[in-house]
Image (tube, rainbow, N blue to C red; front, side, top):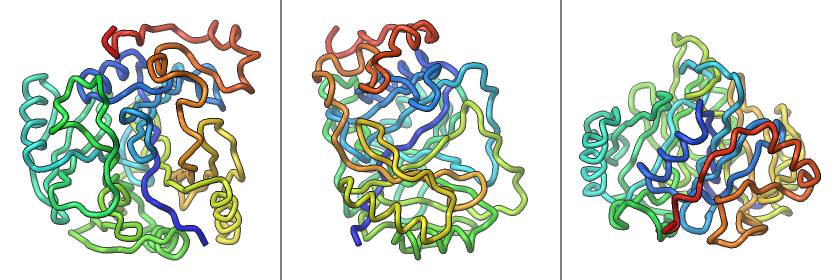
Length: 321
């Protein structure tokens, strides 16, 4: 059986596509590699922010569902997005940057053998930066060549992400018996799980809470978390395995840029399994990636209708333009 590799991408919900574009590119220094639409709701942008070339494990994406209310954090949801930075010195640099830009953040602290700090965007979306000073396993992505962030401090990919649930035993069974995670540490109500000793790029933190209200999904919350598989053959193996575990699932889904399967490990949480390719430069050049609205072939015939229902915004203020 082919193993899961680590984190693939995370998809969150924003109140404003132009503002999240500026936050992710100008504040965090990520690469908008794909400007497209939610294939299940084409009235909604789907923006992909990655490393230089869109490597799996570096990818955070956003929907901007029209008219959606503000979300509320709580149990039975994905509650904090993790990013990795190279070392402790980089974390100190980011703390100064957030202070200078008046971005809400916490002091640097330590947990599970690594330093981290929390920060928040304009929607109160919850993030953490984790230092790779003592990390092992999966390497990071490639430095985005047009990033405003110095390379020695730049975000290198997704890191340990929080999932808060009131069904710890069931989640533990899904993670360890189905997905291949190992529970490697605990601090109070936080449990650290890791795939195959692959380090920060393959970790989730499960928070056990019986008293929080349920998460209300809206802007400022996370939609789903995806884990990486090598290719489509491996994905079909895993679809069969998920079905045998009797979890609600989507079956095979072709997203053009990768292939997927979605399933729910329990109430409120949505996981995805996604292939590492074919990749985001399948249908446009590097220099044009993220500049124009790109549609997969099966939506191209509806371009005029789709564009008529989207509010256009400029994403050309990048790549030296």
